[in-house]
Length: 331
Image (cartoon, rainbow, N blue to C red; front, side, top):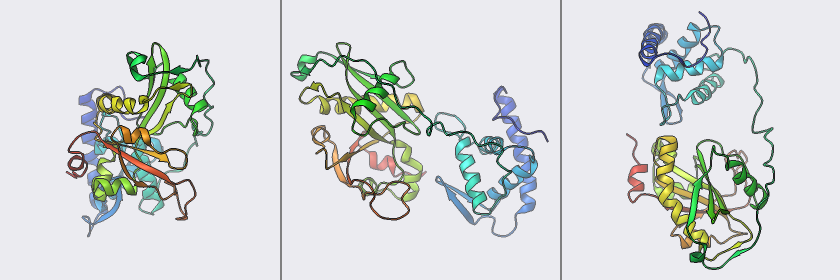
């Protein structure tokens, strides 16, 4: 059979549905012959999905039915066959590829050889170039600034300026967010005053998880409803009392709607990290954020169980009143 070259782009909705039905019927017949006792036993749990023997047999049958297909094509077909899509309707092909790789490493399936190794765009990404900007000091009362414009700039002509300002003036510099994220510039009279970046939250964070009180299955299913404030920069020549806490309050009102428009799902809880040795988190406290605890000083890829980075305070802010109930749902 000819290799599959995509997830059905160019086909009508009816044609795609017909192809998926045909694929499922053919693979079920093959997979049914490959399963025996224990087909209902959970073999693997991956991203909140439980895979039993019959699902693993289905993946084996998919690979066997398309011996010339690449790993990329197989992951697209699996996403399509299982109807595994993101909240915005896009296929979870990358997630399926990670799943198939995990199954192969565990010895459950055999994947075709890697055909090419694409370069990592994050590894070769150039640092944001400096931008010219008016650095005349901005001082005075918040009311004296006049109307403030909070502008979402991701995928706009202003995104590069936002990245450059963070790179030049935030103590952590600029790091390209991975996953869902939005970026904001705040203007007064046409001049940028501040930058904020919000992105997908880390899957495991003890202080947050204890505060929410959700069980592991709920966390795996609902982590997408938590958003992290990964960068917050008031430009160094801006000295306006209460500006930072005011902006956090503004963001709490506008972020949920803009996130849902961008990604097709709401967000119910916001979090951030504050390096205690540098900052006290005063603006978060003034904006009614809640101190949740401290990190243990280990990153997400930790293998030594030893602190290897600065401890940080964890702050959180409920974006809806019933956040715990929403985040704890598993059905």
